[in-house]
Amino acid sequence: MAAALFRSDVFLAPEFPRFSDREYRRRERLVREMLEKEGLQGLLIYAPSAHSPGTVSYLSNYSGPWPAHLVFPYSGEPTLLLHFRNHVPCAKDMAVVKDIRWHGNDPAAAVMESFRRHRLERSRIGVVSIGTIPHAEYESIVHLTPEAELVDVSRQYNWIRWIRSDEELTWIRRSAALTDMAAQALKEEAKPGLTEHDLNAIIHRAVLGRAGLVRVGFLTATSMSAPSVYVPWQFPRKRRLRRGDVLITEMTVSYYGYQAQLHRPFVVGAEPTPRYRGLFDVALECFNRVVRSMKPGATAEDVVKASSVLEENGFTSFDSLVHGEGGKNPELGSRSSGLPMEDFTFRKGMVVVIQPQPVTRDMKAGLQLGAACLIAEDGAHSLHRFPFEFTRCA
Image 1: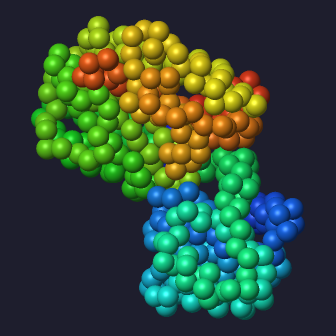
Image 2 (image 1 turned 45 degrees about the vertical axis):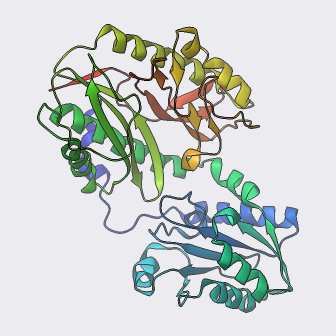
Image 3 (image 1 turned 90 degrees about the horizontal axis):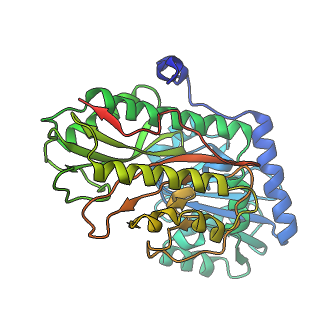
């Protein structure tokens, strides 16, 4: 890897980073064009948490850790409503929205009041992420604004966001580089005797001083000679690494709400056994086939067909093969994964995660190999620099 990948000054900034004014104007123009097309006078945008897709942050630059609502009128300044009052001062420094308020522990009433201030209480209003708004809260909003018509436009709004601009790709590449740094730290520091909690600490230390935030750190080890784990687990265990282990990983380091995900297997103080070498080789071949298939206009069926090398070599899969933002949008599996086929067509400028996960039919051994990729005219391109290798540590 290039040495510049590990320079901390690449990531440190004197204040909260923001996109250019031109970028925010571009986003607002696209959203207002969508409002016109759908016959809407404004939007109510909801984000349940920082782990949720960047619906609110897209127009506000606020990527806080708690629920937030953004009322975005066709004309006039938007209003950002926060869950906690003490989060307002920080949000005012981070966000590009000027009108930032605490919802007073009554989000429905605060939304209604925002509609009234923006003269939207009798309008047709689009709602984004309607499925994540708590039911009682949504019912209260409907009750308090009986003359407003609320319309679900999550898909229309999200397709605007899913086609990434050059400025957004810069932030996603920073996330990818930070995630690569976490993987590099594992390569250099993982050794027999460390617990999975210790490994979790290693990846956090690698990125916290560089404006990175670990969003996914699934790190699970098992013996290559007698495996009992075939997919990365979501919580670390006190089990200690041993020579001859395989460490299977899924890592995402966020850069101010933008995320790239990496999957790599590591072998501890030994060479991969024939079984694990076979798993890796098939995973790499599957990754490359899917990458080549994922051109603009490719369908979910095209992508899943490209993954058939898993089943052709006698393996199955237990996780998604391809996913978009938030682990969904879409979430596709190989033929034997059990995931349903979705009606989805890929577009140029999308960023997706390609992550083949071959598993032996007895459900004892498996690994995952993947990366965040940008869809271009000739297929998908990895945004990561960490090698596609069965990496040896210790």
